[in-house]
Image (cartoon, rainbow, N blue to C red):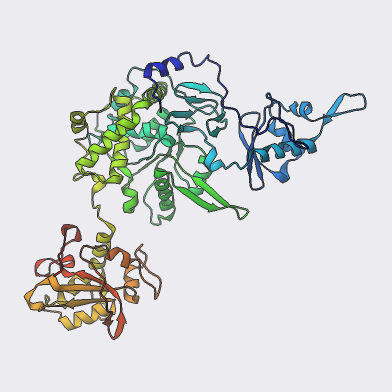
Length: 598
């Protein structure tokens, strides 16, 4: 894309309140002259513009530049006249019905329906999911930043009326907050304000500034990071949520305390606005919460979600929103969810400390100033993001972690600093993001490691008499490492649960390099162990645990099946060194890098 200088953009935005809004690109009408028997085109001053059709629905921009889907069967008199609000009498000009004296008496809705549906059909297929952009920020075809502000559209500082711009339709909505130069350093003011809270990490106010900028940019970003505010009572979580909502501005964020994914789909529609959920607490039944978290995960990468419609037609939804959660206790998160978020922990605000200044007028000035900084600095964003992502990768962050924290740091940089970061600066500003000590990385292990550790630590019945042992202890006994529990008995218990110790050397030598734990592909005992986990399997079917365990270092599939209490089963061989440490002590999988099989 051709970058505009900050001066050019700032000049374009000067006096914005009095500059008339420009029209966007024209909506192609195909052949201007109607074909024989064809339909005449609408006049240039017509307030309604056909966009196209999808199935049995025609799409229009109405007299208020709103998107109006109208089924063919619903092209009735009132529905059609409603398209022309507030110029409802325009229909008398287009389709007049005159009396015998030539005076316009009323209008002809049948003729209007025929012409409007026909013109919509001439436009071709219009898919809202691909061609419609609601309020929020978007990236243009050439990389330019497009801000949909409800009643106007800003493209690199230039202001347009809602409508067709480039290859997309930006329909009209309620007026939202607009960029305006209000403060010299609004980003620094916001960071100082966030620092009034007692975050556990010095980095967290910086990261939260990054989330606010990312939240405003949402639809223009390739990756939309999640943030979770957590802390005990009286740490200021709800107040902080309200401050963030006031900074982003009314109409610029969706703030709720209780919702469902369907409720959010309906509120978001084709918008790219951020979502803030307060008091999102861990509950005994977290299924509803998990569904919302799954939606936030999909929104991070802009994945398409398909749902059935009320009339048995598939509905497609693509979320492009940054999510902010807050709670005293976080629900248990799947690894793929935790890897997509920054966790910002709060301590109680010390007694005697002055509460943060909650001047809504000042918060609004900060928000408008940040939007101005975003618009004027956008041309450098891709270079800034690349610098942070590469540096975090060199620090040891994986790809997903570099996406999350690279985006947060780049967004914060956009409003806190004036240049593209250099190496020495990156060393300094990223020093608090050591992946070895970050809360977000606690207990982060690969799925196959988690599966094996879950299996080993599971307690099972020995002889159905109420006595239970962890599977790792039974494996120890099966190789002769338990004086109170013989190898033969332990081996029989393991086989009842779909596992077997395979030894190719003398077990008394404690050489585990040729000893293996075989785990069956399908077994009722294993199905019981893994039920209610994502590694479970159907009865008599291959379990998902098979896929996970085969990713363990040194795992392999034998050519021949093995007997499990007389029944032949195929399975996966896991090197005993992958399972047990020296002298049969349990050794977590995460401590083993590479296991040679001799």
